[in-house]
Length: 292
Image (cartoon, rainbow, N blue to C red):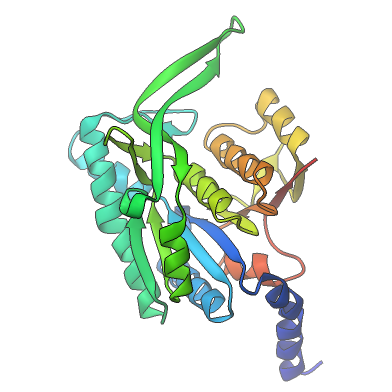
């Protein structure tokens, strides 16, 4: 096979996926190394722009943990994590919103715009996109009793009004969303970015939810598992084989699947063009979560 034929075959491999996802919405949670390394940042932006020009509607929800941690450290603020969730007091919340909405969001917007896209940056507070309520995390103690832990100004999504996103999509824009929302009482709350992406995917009836991570996908006993059912995941969480920051990722995938999102994936954001590999190739990349 000559070089030109190989290129054509790659394009033809993508054809059924282009037909299937044309006009559909794909929600992508952007985080980890893909937000730090210059080559990965550029390849992610190219992926998002190409998807839009191919007639697919990408919606990006981003994190920003390393940037937040760096500023918190420089300000000598104390912070802690419990089961992958940041404990957020008022000074920390100010840093979170400033970094996510004021800095990181605009950096992503600039990068995608440089690659030829039409991104619009917003947070859950804009246009009534997301209403949150205070989140109390439930943890089972050694005695088997469930305890509720107050994480401070941490919220969970209560309502999503996708109208602003649908309007942007119709006009050819790419929404870039920071995971900050407001309660009905007007209190600003920090939302886990994976959870935010899942809620957005549900509200938009997305065909696919993709979470970028710094692992090959879901690892069980050190081995990548490419496909998991709902029951498998609950079992692995109970045995501790899925733990820490992976728990909110798989839980948001399960919530999305239960609410009608057709497919949820946890993929390796350290691989250049991982989004395109997942969406437009037969092999894909990472772990697929589905009902069952």
